[in-house]
Length: 202
Image 1 (cartoon, rainbow, N blue to C red):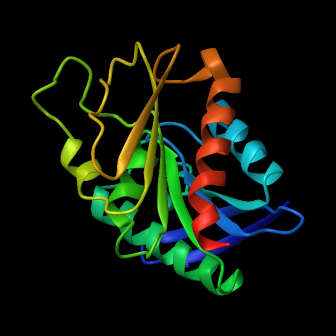
Image 2 (image 1 turned 30 degrees about the vertical axis):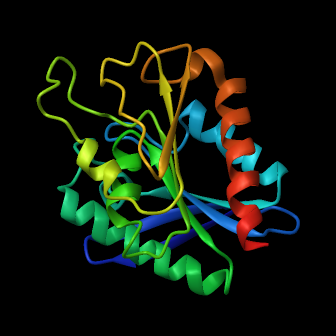
């Protein structure tokens, strides 16, 4: 495991690299708003991806690196993420990039997929709306993604459940927003989807 510190316009970000023996792609995973890269679903997906030959970069946003709990505004999160993605694209020259993350990190991955030239997007616990506020839908962020997208969602997630669309599929598992009730299911869904999607680029 290698840790990189990457300067962004909003302070240093950090990328924890978990490399596969012979990587065919790079999966960037971002954390939730109040959580870190040690979240159990992120760890499960990291191991699953490595096992099928995908390098993984667990990305810590600058506000987390600086020790702050409150997330930065969306434009700062997106800008820092794209800076990290550019750095990793150079480091893993020529390999396709998959953007992903849990909750807030999933939103960042969706919003930046086009600008960052991601070939696919993996969303864990996409926060469709704030708890109890279904009228504040974020479905448009998901619908704007034009590359293959997987959403893994807990059936009792208080943040709601996004709708499937032409480019994205939804896998619903037992559990809530943490996705910890069925980590095997999370791993399996991510592994099967990555294998299928990345076959197009091998």
